[in-house]
Image 1 (tube, rainbow, N blue to C red):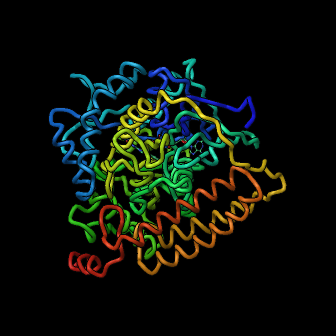
Image 2: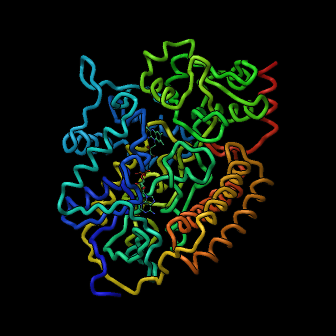
Image 3: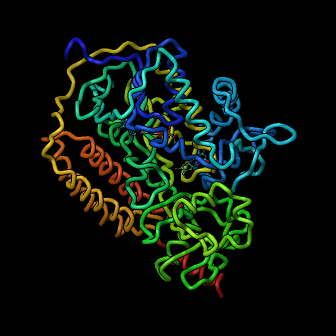
Length: 506
Ligand SMILES: Cc1cc2nc3c(=O)[nH]c(=O)nc-3n(C[C@H](O)[C@H](O)[C@H](O)COP(=O)(O)OP(=O)(O)OC[C@H]3O[C@@H](n4cnc5c(N)ncnc54)[C@H](O)[C@@H]3O)c2cc1C
């Protein structure tokens, strides 16, 4: 170890709401914090993209808890749900209102609380339909102005530094150079796994790094099969890329899903038609796209431009003529599982914490209630940051990672990535078949083996992202294969379900 090695009391990895909250709490506790983030712009975090808002507890906290548990198909951990709901208002008031002065939308009598699917009261604070950026940008700016927090952007954590069950820091890469950062505690806040799938609502480079790094270091990981797909992401003309997310609210206001033959199909799938649970709609959209070529969201029943000006503008930006219907497809949206943590974000490894979407707190169980993930990131971020503070860094021998190899063809990573996303889409997507899951595991194992061989000889950020994505993909496939019960977001192909659908159609 060199004398001038980087050190921090707390190293936070990731600059979404969870990482920012952890950094804030650790700094408030008197620690020097280094926050390393791959992002180069605020838009590099899912937190920036959040639309609907952040749920808080209003008149009936017990009902809020019941709603979360019901949305999870009864699988959420009641203790974790209790922590979330009981700390929601204090966290929002302290950080978002008093510290950051976020101006949530108001009506004549105060905050304009809205309601989303499966909430039984109006309890969601929002700013238009673009809440994320109105929270995220002031949060980043606030921490950037603090002397006890150093934000290093365009800096990726590649690997944790671990010795005998304790984490001592992480290897950081910036501009091709790799160096250790030793820390009293490390908080992983690396977000979701969108890039494992060809279509995702997440920003680029969401490769499940935190989950993979923690798993490779020996931390416990749970519930990885519970991947939420959003049913209506607007897709580009060739049906490939996601242009933007079309919020559920559009269906709530009367938008209708039509297949390639112009037929409305959701009543054939569920009594609640377009307002059926997310996973039901996602499966139906997928199946109708396969059968008829495309699915569009018909917005003619509503005054789209007046009711959803942001979305109408986004259509314009992406050359989508919404008067003809918005082309939609399911897209990976949120990971409910992740690195197992307790009520203070502690993982099973000493001095390693995980918060936000990369963590499995138990709040979401097999499925997530809308507008609870910003809140989870905020609440657990604050709790983990406070708990992580107060430990001195203890530098040890760091792993010897090779400097970036300029000769490594960029295509190596992109070709393998393509293979990985195809496998995930085909075999580990919105609906799963046990044989397909086994097939996926075999392909992913081979792919991971090939990538591991490269990582041993060369270092580059894209290669590490690929390694992380292959580790995480394998975890999703393995956990899915081990779970033979369709629950929440984990849906096994079942003749029973097809029979039910046929009966409804008759
Ligand atoms: C389009 C969209 C709409 C949504 N709407 C809502 C909503 O209305 N309400 C709600 O509650 N939730 C919503 N969600 C979900 C919610 O936004 C996310 O779950 C939440 O913001 C995740 O926060 P996070 O801090 O865990 O991760 P993120 O905000 O994704 O941040 C992760 C950070 O980690 C960094 N990072 C990753 N790997 C590394 C690495 N190896 N080294 C360094 N840095 C790394 C990334 O660059 C990024 O800065 C939405 C999500 C999307 C995509």
